[in-house]
Image (spheres, rainbow, N blue to C red):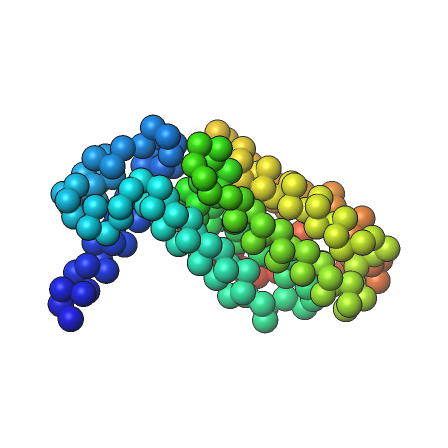
Length: 208
């Protein structure tokens, strides 16, 4: 049992270190030596857990997908409707992209053209956004727009903020996301509920 716990801790440390190095250097430049050194383990220990850099990248992306799944479900009961939930969740995603290197690296790896991965996290986010907008339509809080069309705009903008964020953190700031929703909500929301929606989010802001 002790060995299993130690192995799990080592694996977790390697995933976190890999995310840090991938985020800093990019997948193609990142070295296994740098990753193992940051994790405080030998190259042999790294290869015991992961056969290659690609396997490590897959593990980082999988861990990021778990974090994204948590982000889109943890506050479901805190919003009055699905449109407000979408606003709240986009704020939380932006906050966590700033605070969580594994989530950030996972998105970066999803769009890396060097590795044979796929846009997994982007598809995961797109599916959830579209689902939330379909729920909003069913609740009668969506204006006369197709959920699929609205999802295209929301996903394009929010993932654009994610791409721009590493160069300028302001793109992922609470202020930027709030301004985005102030611009978009009048187009998306039914007039009967527009005044009740909070572009800044309807839940207290947590610190990263």
